[in-house]
Image 1 (cartoon, rainbow, N blue to C red):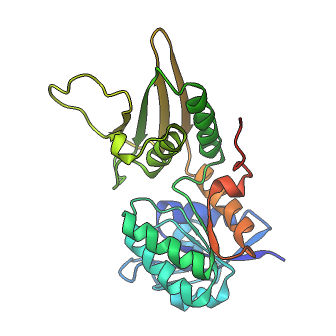
Image 2 (cartoon, helix red, strand yellow):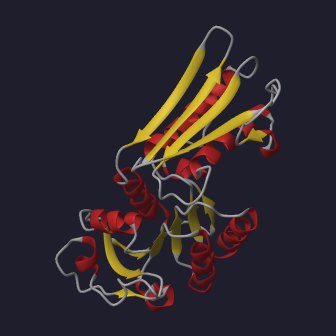
Length: 272
């Protein structure tokens, strides 16, 4: 039997992509969709909004109007909206997949606490299989090159992206910090003026915004006489949407708790 999915932010870029791919996948069915009450898509047929024939599924103005229909909620919206959706879902205990970025520490802690107590959640800043493999490669590289290499993360996204640095850049930085025994106090987000010599423990995170760049991330390990660069480039949002659907199929039926794409893809085990 196909998993029944509800999509938040149905009229957004990611919402539309996810919905289109759901209709191509026999393992998952769209049973509900919703948007912010002021969004002009509210009240319209999903098909009309995403470029498909009419589906009979109307975009509602709240999660509560559709939540009882589904097995899993897929949410790529806005951090404040995702927190509120998690609060609502705590009453219903449906599985969730959240790919939203821009959470504050307090917001993310609240979402995680709700999931630990009430529902299974896959929460990750990047649902791409390639990015999650990159995280493992970065982990391995950081272990091998633990001394004598300066580490920089460069991320690039489209001009409309609201948060900086990207959640994926922070995810990569967190992987490195955990391996090397560092913390977010070692992150350096910008440089200007007379900055002096680079501290040995610094993890640089640099941001580029422009045009329609879907997403690019490079982790540079710069040593004396050599440089290793690990890069992932996304050319379509479909890579994130396919990962989200894979996560939705995986998380239904799991115990309450917080999972990541590393769990979904079986990449938790250390490479060395």
